[in-house]
Structures are given as structure tokens and as C-alpha cells.
Figure 1 (cartoon, rainbow, N blue to C red):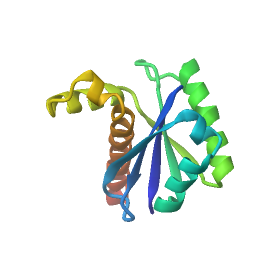
Figure 2: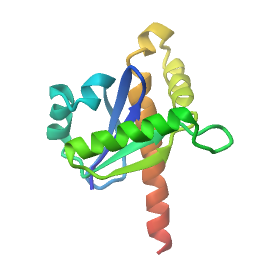
Figure 3: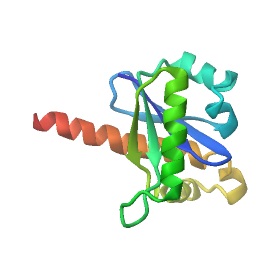
Length: 142
């Protein structure tokens, strides 16, 4: 099952996708948030290209593990996007994924300016990979 992960921000949405077997996450692109929430042509093209069966949206929990105002906003937007494109929506903990994405890009020698367009899609691929890994572990226990 192919999963499309969305790291929903106020201005941008990072997009990542799993392979069809649901084992490996890869960053895809960063889109303007307005294009995603309106299900505009660039986002529809991503959906057509990858044909996901599920949207996995990152929730920015507080460090204590609670949903704050930002997480509630993301949840509302994610459910709206899911309804608009006819896909089920699940949520994943995205705490610290952007920080980890920045660290990873810095290790590759990128400065802040070069990172700007990449952080959100790398963050989406990080929480998608963690979610996929957790599912594989759960399935192995069955």
C-alpha cells in the first residue's frame, strides 16, 4: 500500500511517499499550503503520479505529548484534504522531525538558504519512515 505523507505547515506542505510495499519513505516535493488545502492542480498531479491509498499527516504534539493549538489546526486541515481527495487520513507524531531534517541537511553541507525548500519534505519522509518501521514491527509480532 502506497502512503503519501504530508508535513502541513502554515505556508508550505512537505510531501513524501512510500514505496508500494510500504517499507521505504522518500521525499517528493514541497508545495504551497494553499495548493494542498484547495486540492489545486500541483497537488492533484502528485496524487495522480503516486496514487496513494492513505494520507499520513504529521501532528506537531507538544514535548509533553499533548495536542496543542497547532496540532488541532493541522488535524482540521488534514481531514479537509482527505475529504477533498477521497483518501483516508491517519496521523503520526512529527515532533522534532524538522529539527532532525535540518541536522541531516547540515551534515550534507547545506546552509540555511539551500535547506529552505527541502526541510519540510525531508521531515515528512522521516515521520513516514518511522511510521512504516513501527507498522512492520507490529506486523512481525502478529
